[in-house]
Length: 297
Figure 1 (cartoon, rainbow, N blue to C red):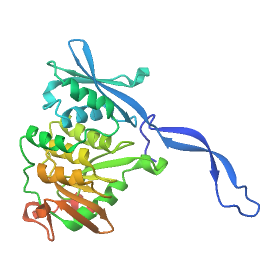
Figure 2 (tube, rainbow, N blue to C red):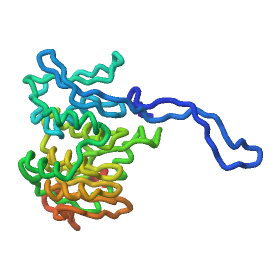
Figure 3 (cartoon, rainbow, N blue to C red):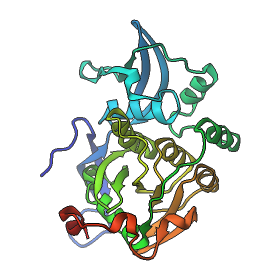
């Protein structure tokens, strides 16, 4: 059995109730495993001076990727070279991650207050969509085209990676797939936006952005902040198991992101930029079948 990330689950005492049957107690005391939810303070550090940017509730795992992804997708960092190192203080009992930068990074005070106030859901508001669109310099540019049936298979592939969900039933997941449908990375977290930040943060730290030939699959509904983060990373297609919000659709349209939702049971509905979802295999992904692609179907 694959080992779970340290401290990602917590054991608690609970009482299980079931329909009464002859000779069987109605209530049974039993231990339960639940997902861990703890605060994480993200700080920028330069010349020994630390400034808190955000406090978010998350599942302890890949805090360094989470911090990098958050700072990048919110437009605070733009290049991985700005980072000297990322220090997690969890080993000594502190829920803090320090992102040490080469130069001092300015964060708008109003933006910092917004992050601290809305740490569980990210930024929101229609006026911010226009501002984000302008700040990113235009829509996502990609000629990627993927058959609908390939996108429809992604939720099952993502679900097979959800070890923590199998144990607790209480997490969101995000997975990044290449054009052939092969999994590049996946992450779980109590916050759907945190799972996305972990995946994008790893790519940002590795210098792999923009990701113009990938698909971001999420396990639940898709809201504005998911589309915003995908657009920042240059990801052209976002797919979700559940419904989109109206603001997610508006953001996807503005940011040039293909938005597919209700991706389940070999079906999907495309709400923005449907030109990237095709009926048959497109030439730009059809040349040469890799063993990995054959295995994944």
